[in-house]
Image (spheres, rainbow, N blue to C red):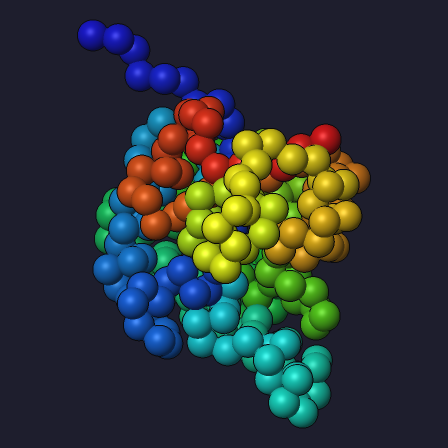
Length: 241
């Protein structure tokens, strides 16, 4: 029998949107979706890949949308951060039911439900084979969970950010609206910024560019894709220098 492919990355940060947890629902968390994600994360943990996760909160509360309707932006953003904690606890539950030890570290202290974010503690959890879920964004308003993902990835010295989406990579235009849109296999940070492609927000892309941290954008809805990306298969779009 041939040896299983060695992982291309030893430490990753997986960025999930809050909407990814909804499944076919219009709100909240679908347990079937968290279970599927947990299965895929368990599979890459079995390869020896150290895994950190950042989840958005858009399935519960979107700070930017509330701000546009007149709510104070800082208050709205803090509410959005609390929504990410709910999602992180839901994912932790699914992971641990699948035998994956998990720790939630939050940028806003709430010791009854999660550990405070301490960089060295996060690194130690990863080294011990635990999945680390970073909750509450950066702990600051006006920063998205994309930026939190880029920041945490660099703090833990991740090899790559895996950005899970509903499409199979980055396109020159919205492939749903424009049938002539072409998919990129590779693209530079600068091209993403200059073409204003909606991959991650500009702060996150700039952080990754300044620190040469690659991003792989891939379709989360296709089973096994996380494992394929981790093994270095040509899935999705690679954003790099």
